[in-house]
Length: 578
Image (cartoon, rainbow, N blue to C red; front, side, top):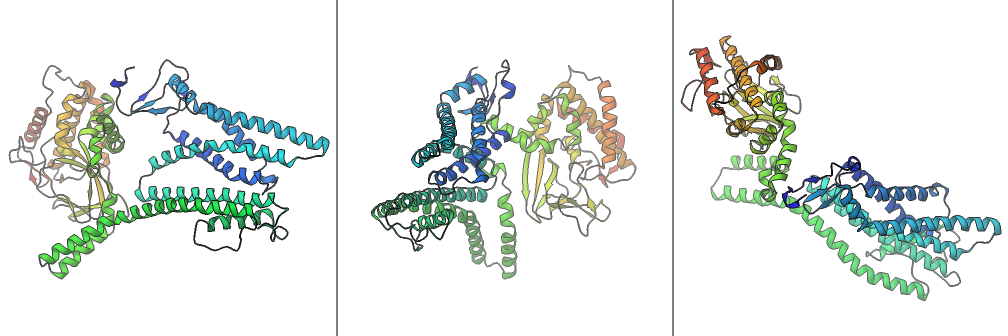
């Protein structure tokens, strides 16, 4: 493989390898789940090892079996890591040989040494327990040494950073990401204080021949209660809080001095991290405050009436946050720097589910599997609208086909019974005729020149997918011949149905045809398109086919009116609308 020929983000596999089917993508949910499980075991070891080393919890029955579970997990993890791909620069390496080599030259020796140490410790502990049963003697120093050897497991703490990066990549809101970072800082400071508390307790436990801070409590409280006192003391070294525990001998006082100096550095770092996160959260609202101030200054300078100024300010406050949450691709300047291959995949993931809801395109997409991807990349866009904003108005040339995906809109037309209809994708409508979204709006513009027959306005904050008609006309000639012919026949049947509606005196507007009509069109199309004979040596110009379809409509209508308006208009000339 020549890496320079690969696209950014492309997955590289080895189709000849029998192991390839078992390789796991580094950003897959399975990898994330396995990593989260490992984080739980790492945190368990980080908490329990010092408690066990200083004999604070003793041999608790409830947690006796957990070390064997974690031990089994880490043995399986050695095998699992040989099956997980990795990101090599701008590509995702999924070839088993490369993954094997990458892990061997990376963390394998560290992971293997930890597992070997665990095996040695487990074997020695079993031998030590057998020795106690046969001789009845117990060496506290030997037992503590074996427990301290388990600290080598903490070398796996690097896994926490890997999983944190994976989780942050899946977070979609800035506030949640900042809260996650604050939680990470909090867990870090608690773990540090946990270790300080254990050592503070251990120093006192090793100095029982001297007067220690534990002395007044050891007879009246359990080890766990004394540990909580040590943890309280540790936390007070990092904050201005008070505590009734004080060092009582030289070793305790030396340790306390070291902790105070250490806390000076840690507290400043922790506070700066929290402050930066809080500042970033406040900055999310700073832009809104600036724009509101600019609006007030503008209206004051131009002498806007108090009533109008109040209405504008209420509108801004009510809708600003909703608008800022509806980020579109064009709102993010750096997206223009993203490689074209990644942007194309991004567009396919964003738009393809919505594009496949279009009956016309979905029924023919199997004839050219790349065509819908091109449409997603070049012709699709997403637009947000605030309440009362117009999506289109009556009389405008239809240059887009629309699919509302969020919020409620109201379509107003003189050709509708009642005059208005709500297109609702959220709450139940009230006071207006309900219209479920079963298709796209202004679909006729894909096949003939069409002008909007009404006004579409946002009733609530909403998002609308738009398919650009001009781009569609540019892309369709490059499609496979079968798809091109299929779309041509679909256009004839689709426009023919609209013309039949006109002949029956029924209005044809921007609203989608009902589901039964679309089913009938699709059935007729599926039965006849493969019998058609298309001159493949002839034109592949979609505009010429549009003109042919237009002439067909004009011939059939013979001056009839479509939706109350003259139907048909060719090559931009004024005339029929359909």
